[in-house]
Image (cartoon, rainbow, N blue to C red; front, side, top):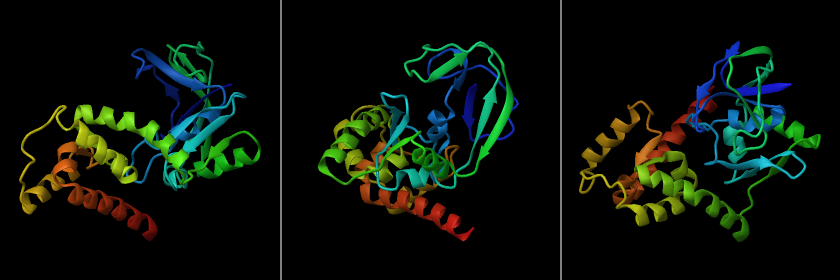
Length: 248
């Protein structure tokens, strides 16, 4: 059986689409548990990816995930839902990407069944209890923090090249982000952010809040010239979202 995991409801057919591999494919898995992490998203709607976890399979092909910060899985998976779509075999091929569990098809693919998971974290913990999933929870040790740093630093450096940094990186890895920004400021540097008044700075934040990404990205120059104000703006965004969730 082939599976496709999505947070989108009501899919009946999957169209081949060009993704990171540059070819129009439908992506599928033969073990649905492998894809559950990818349906997660943080409190601001950022899709769960390598900013939050290190993810893969063990030597015995059991899905495993490493938390990259305290409470990571709670944020991206708890009370987050997804749909496990069962797919027809439309010509799926293995070993077409660098990730072994992934199968791809160049053809339209019909959905032949669906299961709704209302709490992804609860489902993963259930699988863990059954020996079908391995969870490595964050540990505040020098060794684990070095592992996190080695994982996350290249992601931040890549963000610095574009000049736009996802604020979830700042929220969870503030010290590392600031250090990388300070060392990469000249790359794709954008003028016009230095010596802003408080009112001008607030106007910049308001503009970010109202753009198409709803303030999920911030210019690295803001983190360099106004680190405290920028971190405060990010924390308020997270706090506002969390408050709304508690009031539900």
